[in-house]
Length: 527
Image (cartoon, rainbow, N blue to C red):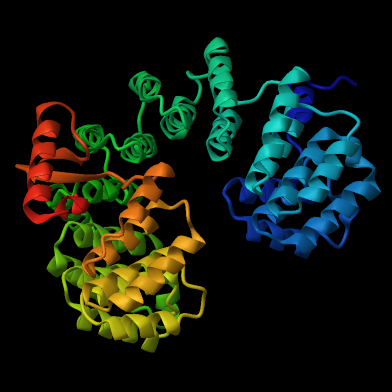
């Protein structure tokens, strides 16, 4: 009896229904790939955990990954036991998954032990351990392991290299960062993940001690694609190096390319306006923040469950509010600074210290003191910065209140606080107190020329010029520090250095000094 050939062929190719276990494994993998880690763990507990031997080597990495991202250490330890009992720990793919899991649990010691015990390591093993060190703040160890990884002939993916370059910025290891850049160029790795890697290199060249802006600009210009992160890295680096004009041009060019600045970009830009004292640029950025919904929302209800959800998104709003507050305060716009403070739904110590200092700077000492008390009534705990702000405010108001503030401080007053108190005493004619404090400061820090200058000025106020002190400062090589003033003219900022000049101006100043000395008998000591 002969079977029909077509019928026989059909019977061979009829697909068999997948086993329930295979379907379950596929479902778990699908959940993990979509980031539904808790769902995958729930399925594991309900159907797979009762018979752990049913866990295949192909499904274990997915379950281990789910436990790591869900921060479920209990399940993670169970899975480690399953791997050991099944004898599958010799497989690099499972050991690599366990190393990553323990690193995400912040258990670097267990991760390193697994790494050391592995008889065979691959590129993923080394990358997992380097990433684990970086994730948990072991920056020096991560760089050492990265070097060893390459010494043993393993190559890293661009994503890992970007993380290592960022670590070089954190540790200040600019030399290694340049070496890695050379490695990237030789191996033509920039083409694969140019945005992340190039952004890390831009940050490296702008933030390390060399401040190699030219190289940073070259890397930035060669980027095929730029996003808000790469633009923010360039802008914040320029601001940090006080290249304010380039940073401002970059901020505008970023928008010209259709890329919207985010909260981090705005926070990076605001110190530019503070540094320049140029309120026009600050209002430009404030306006952008307002139009795009980055301002603090005074109508935001932070009570109940909804409040708990909203609070998670308030972090950057607090940063934006503080940055605007600081900018307006330093630019002399007390009204704008006060308005921003009132609109902030969340305030921290920096917020209170800044607004207190702003009121004090403008001579509103009583209002500053009221804000200081209001801060305490609302549960705020003043720190040294807050005390310095209120003390500076008292300099413009009452010495007694300044002394009371210092005497009630919960921490030891810093040198800045004592110096501020001396200035308050001198300003309000309490010269005997100022003299005693100034003498004490000189004894504490005899090499600090500012203390000697302060003491000399206290004596000058009392009519005692104390020429020997000036000679002592000359012998010690102590000189009064030079200061810069910045003047804004039509949104352009010019620097003016207040220091001894060369040439004709210096000679003219000397002539004026000699004339005053001859006319008044020693007033030139003030100069």
